[in-house]
Image (cartoon, rainbow, N blue to C red):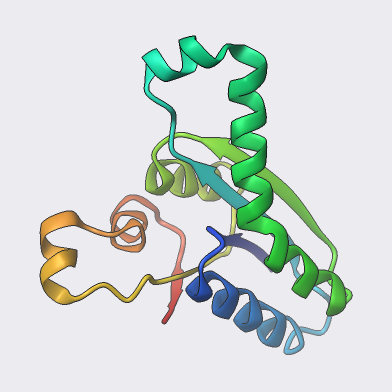
Length: 140
């Protein structure tokens, strides 16, 4: 089983990580886990002003924050995993990575937005569901 765990540092993301830990216990052999975080790209003007090094540090800092708790939970559960940090539209990058690397399952948290907000803004989980052929488990 090849599981992509998409995290953003939120409480829902923590619950998704706990779900993956519990799910992993049900398999005869541990699943292949990939911990993924996607940072939204900075505006071009901001990126130019910061410079290449500072921009890279900004993305690294965002990804470290988003992955920190999930990494600790997976390590405590003694699960092996790889980390992938991407920059772009989160739903696009998650779906693309899952498809490209032949994930069997995507697991991610839901921010629990109201129905009205979800209709107006859309959610990353809804967009991933629409874009990917890979089954998706959304944890509230």
